[in-house]
Amino acid sequence: MPSLKIHRNDTVKVLTGSDRGKTGRVLRVFPDNRTVLVEHVRVVKKTVSSKSGKRTKGGIAEQESPINVSNVVLICPNCGPSKVGTKTEGDIKVRICKKCGQTLPTKK
Ligand SMILES: [Zn+2]
Image (cartoon, rainbow, N blue to C red; front, side, top):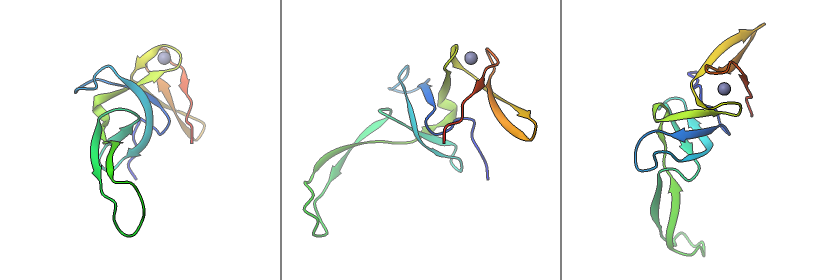
């Protein structure tokens, strides 16, 4: 299974598009598409219709759409926006900040 260097719950900064400069928490990662869903980034308005018997209110809902992982950069808790590297500690692969060398926490 392919894995991305950006993980769920990471904080990332958006590099391109109308949300350039925004930071947000990664809600989901899609390794197959190399895309991530970032909170409050690339929000699209969707028309929600009330159907199938559920008494949900129709209207406009806002929802994030995935953006390519190459369009975001991880924010290192220690030094800010940075590239992610990896190193192997024993038999565990950990992510490190390429700038300051700090091991990045992997939250599940
Ligand atoms: Zn760092």
